[in-house]
Length: 107
Length: 172
Image (cartoon, rainbow over all chains, first blue to last red; front, side):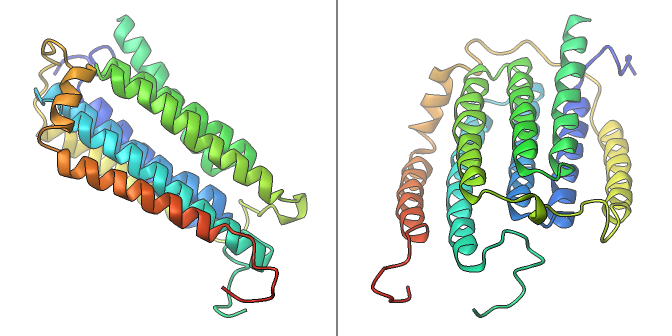
């Protein structure tokens, strides 16, 4: 096994992707401010992108992974826009963006 | 050697930035650290030979999506009293311990399952826009058109959702 510090292999990128994904998931679970929850979702998508490109580079992939990552970025943009629009509408009605203060389904 | 240094720096920025995103009380600070994390990820894309996607990442993700986030954060104008107490409430250990377990188990699995060969020589034109465009407008043409439809739906949806309530008193 070659030196894991100096010799960067596929598993370095995958462990990084996993770690960032877990940090994003922790943010979604723990944070109450919905803006930060959205940012954590973007972190998770970002982690998936790293994993895609790492596999493509180390496994003689073609441009398929690049196209998929492009689609992920596009979908993330739309999802962020729509989610933030919902958040703005929610803020207008409830006056807060904290998940623990938005606890009644009506009103 | 240089390659390893670059990787560790960028990986540290990505992971450190992401940790700081989820632990900032102020959403503006969280957004700025997310920009750092996304920028470092773009650097990682470059180390992986995906230079077109690295540029797209900076332009779109760090440049457009995060600007949108900043707009909304400024629009909502969160007061200090509304900032949440992060370190109170349910403890972080409940997410940190399972997360650490998954991380260690995952790294062990990756280490065992994946052969240790390094990256091969990249194909000619790898990560260049010609290769991506060939696939995008060839094999993935339907998905491309679907994404454009998705963008249209997103635009219409955002305009409807974020509209000010009608002044005539009607609910929407």
